[in-house]
Length: 78
Image (cartoon, rainbow, N blue to C red; front, top):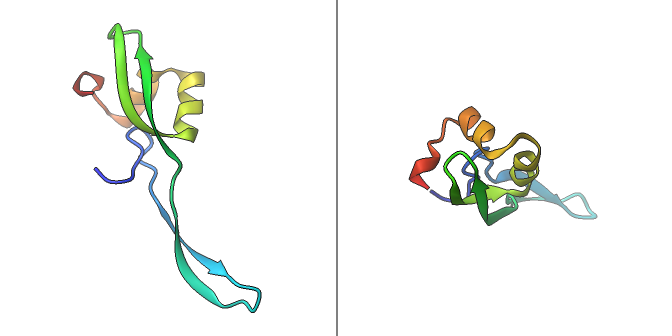
């Protein structure tokens, strides 16, 4: 599965670390992932997902069922 958000599919970004002399070296900007237990009211149970912090905020606003439907994920598997 790797370092990806299970709902938004966010992953690491390739970037440059720029020094004071403007020497550029490659670096990876990792996504802020958290293991999170989220209550799923439609399934009447807890679901454990690896989510980005942005996805956690969006779940609070939209709801887990709506986010999973947009991502095309079956929550019964988690």
